[in-house]
Picture 1 (cartoon, rainbow, N blue to C red):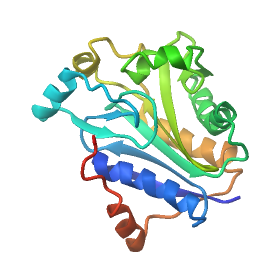
Picture 2 (picture 1 turned 90 degrees about the vertical axis):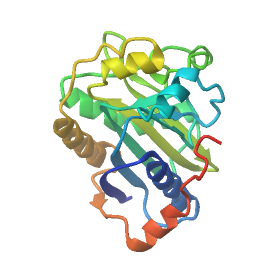
Picture 3 (picture 1 turned 90 degrees about the horizontal axis):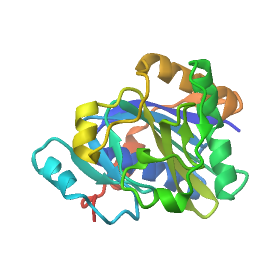
Length: 240
């Protein structure tokens, strides 16, 4: 099956989340091929999981100071600081709706890409119930996350299912800002060696083509009509 590669985009939180919601909507409507994209955020942003109701007062203070933008993701999980990272999003109809199996299959390309970069990654071992007690997504690695040999989490992923259709997106840490990380989470950033963005993006696209999309990955930019559909999905109250 052919997959669609949407070219990388840097934009604000509301638009990025609208595109992800639109990708899932298209799959549910049977409109077009499965989709994959990489993107970045135009300013430091903290995204909260769909069911994460507790908002740390320091996050609100940083947002009021204009140093951090807050947004709610359509997927689950805990808070993710989008700075010094890449975000990926894929939307498809997996062969299975078993959650952990779908995670494993949807993350294989990420493991292949980082192995090629000399950074092998394995799934975490922390139980989901334990991780849910922490507000910071990168404070622990579950079976849905990819960690390095030293236990540091490199990629955190989350899902949203609509029937048999899946939206999975995740944060790929490249060089997280230490000072801002401490201000947001009151803890140090994961102990990770910095990685060059261009090399990571190239390996991710190559691995996706060969190990997610079966060699059939076609670049198709968003059309004017699709942009109109996406803009209608922007959330006017992103933390509501």
